[in-house]
Length: 230
Image (cartoon, rainbow, N blue to C red):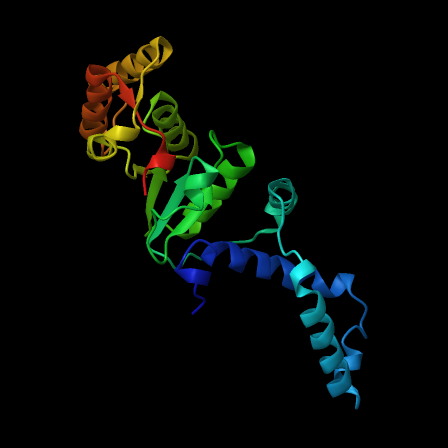
């Protein structure tokens, strides 16, 4: 069974990338690309490659910038025929710093949203859900107006019953030294969302808890960015 590096994150992503690579790899490289490593001088070639690597490894970068990843994901979405999740929890994350943080458990599959999801991410999430309906789906975002609107938009647009992760009154109390004061606009947006939960316009399995959290935010005029939560 495939296991994620460091126990986290890449479990699903690796499967998708490997599937895509297997389909296209030999359409790109020449047929005799690996021939030197099967010849009688293969030991010499291997030693030379290792020597070059050890000489320049401090100057070699394996990083990929975010723009490249997003571009690849967009271009290859139609080539993905299915997904398989081995972890128990699938978590969408609003902010990049928190995506790389310590809030997750071994085996969690984490997907960075970067705020509101776009059409590609929405279709990707729906594709994942279609093949992995027994997993638990969570959203981890800021405990502020934007965070809860993103959560509700995510549920509504994907049709997936996401639950919130660490977006509650307990976190506001635990990290109260990191909370910020609500702006006038914050209050208006939180009040509007609270009213929708109160009147039953929005209903989900966490309606009561979310309504309590929103009221607590209004009563105490506080909000919390998810980066403060570990």
